[in-house]
Length: 280
Image (tube, rainbow, N blue to C red):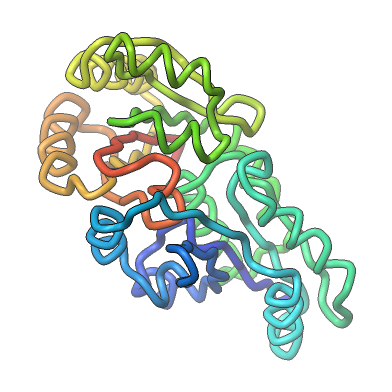
């Protein structure tokens, strides 16, 4: 059985990697006033941050239409027997539900929508692993089982410079945002049951980063093979410094660098930093 792998743009998998592993991408949109851009297609992360700094109002985002999913799945049906469609957490976007709805509207191909429970490179790792298995001829059920294994081992923590974006976007409660801004804290955030929740309240970015390093260290000390990504919102130099430090601390972990692109950065704001890891 030939299986196609689809993910959405919030996985932020570089184009050359998508092409290498035949990963199909459906874009979410970022909106400035009346101007709408498909991320990873019409607007880059760099251009987004420049535009956001000049904008009078914070941008918004929107999910792909069901019609876009149907069109993609019907196109894939010409060459594939099945498709696994891997998407960002279902409680922060309707993208996964769009794939579910579209899956019942196409014929000639079996669609398996998959809720990653995360976003960004945590989700990207899932899509890349799935694509490698699909290219090796693995059955959809085997690929889905592997995704469940990855999900069970995935951890990710991130912090933002300004809680306003999360508050306005409805991804964090207003009271939490007010408390954070008044006390100048850098709360560590994570996902629990598909939702963004505060993990710990920490005063400075340095202390927050060190706390993430400690959490990663606890898992690295178990001797299990891990892969990790440092994810940044227009802070590449800082991400490189973090990567260098972590590689010295944890030489057995495979580290890479990724980024918060337009749609996710709409809600996190510039300067956000996160670290995700899971079993290889």
